[in-house]
Image (cartoon, helix red, strand yellow):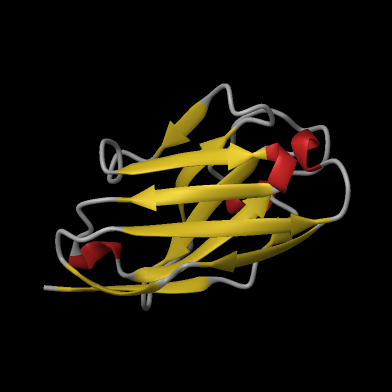
Length: 125
């Protein structure tokens, strides 16, 4: 599967953005999907994940209550709604999928096999 992320941009602190990730290929509904981010000069980190049918979601503590992950399997898409953005949210955001048929949660980027190209989110203070 190939992933294409979009929706990044420049926003002031307290603002909102919605990221989208569209997958090409078949069987999007067979993939556990996640969003990661990589702040400038730092390692890639887990942000949020969602099970194949959207029934369960997972968040890093730093974004709980502010970010919401969702998916629409009919559109082969996963989304990240980001509210009350803060300067520390500035990063390149990536969508990623676990191997097909691996339905369990993981925050380890090494357990993901398909990655989008990344979209830059910049939050000004």
